[in-house]
Length: 186
Image 1 (tube, rainbow, N blue to C red):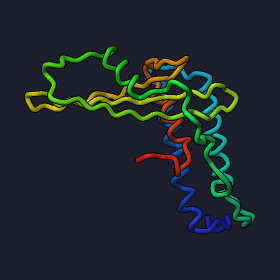
Image 2: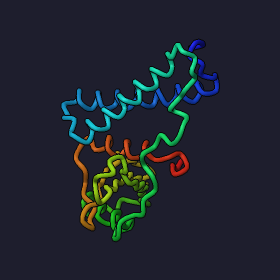
Image 3: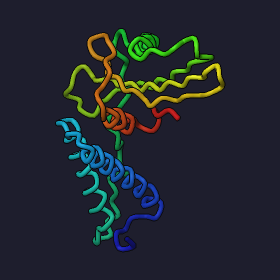
Image 4: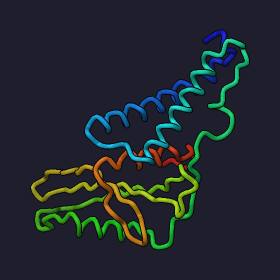
C-alpha cells in the first residue's frame, strides 16, 4: 500500500467503500443460496459492483506511485434526486397496507407505520423511474406487548402501490445505497 502513492486519508475513505461493495456482493450471494434467482436488474448491479471492486483493487496495488483514486474523484452515486411521480402518496400506501394486512383493531392501543420511499435511478434508460417503499409496522397492544413486524416492500407502478415479491429488499437496498450522502436520511 505504501508503494501505491495513495495518501492515508484517501485510504481511510476508500476502504469503507470497498467494504460496502463487498457486503453487497455477499448479500446477493446469500440471496441466491436461499434458492432465489438473480434477475437481469440484479445482474447489472452485480456487474457494476465487480467493476468498482476491480477499480479499487487496481488503485490500491498501484506500484507506479501515481496515487490516483477514482473513489474520491467525482460522484460515486448514480442515484440523484428525482421528483416523485404524480399520485405517489404515503397515506394511500398506509391505507392499502392496512387493507392487505389487517389486524384486530380492538386489541390495539396504538399502531405506527414507518415508510421510506426512494427512487431507483441506477438504470437511467428505464422510464419512468421506479420508486420503492419500505413499510415497517409497529403495534402496541392493550396488554402492553409491542409487536414490530418485518418490513414489507412496495413498488409504485401505474398510480398504485404493489407488494414486491420475497427478496425485493435487494432492489430497495441498492436504491438506498445509490443515494448520494446528502440525500440519505438517518
